[in-house]
Length: 168
Figure (spheres, rainbow, N blue to C red):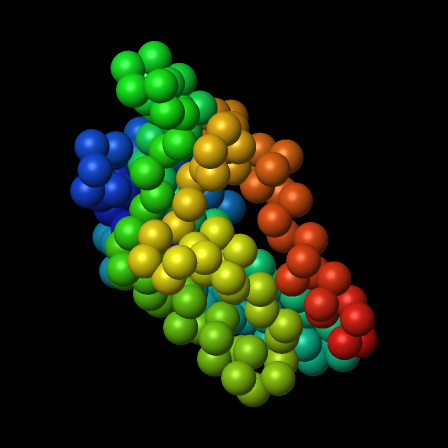
């Protein structure tokens, strides 16, 4: 979803995404009109999924991982130093859904047609249906490097992947 928006992601809690990583594999640059870029990106996702499913392959798509708009380990350390609590407040699920609306809609459409198996990050990271966790207690789910999941975050994917494996 990063490429579908012109403005940095604002989590509404003081964290705003740093958009210094501007690279793309599409023939459109970040300076191109956002509506053209959005169409090109969504079309490329759709075309890729249609081509893969036409080959009769089992396709597993993991939806957009919740972006939090800040450095989770850094915030955890600050919270611990000032409040003696390292847990980082989660991202409101409504904001996650709004940010990823177009991508989620497309993936869920493919899933409803039986063309893909979809792993919904909401089921992995958003257990209370109001927010997507960045951490639980001292266990952070993200590391700073490009804000990817830490081992604890990656381990949360095993349960839904095992369920899909058992079904096949």
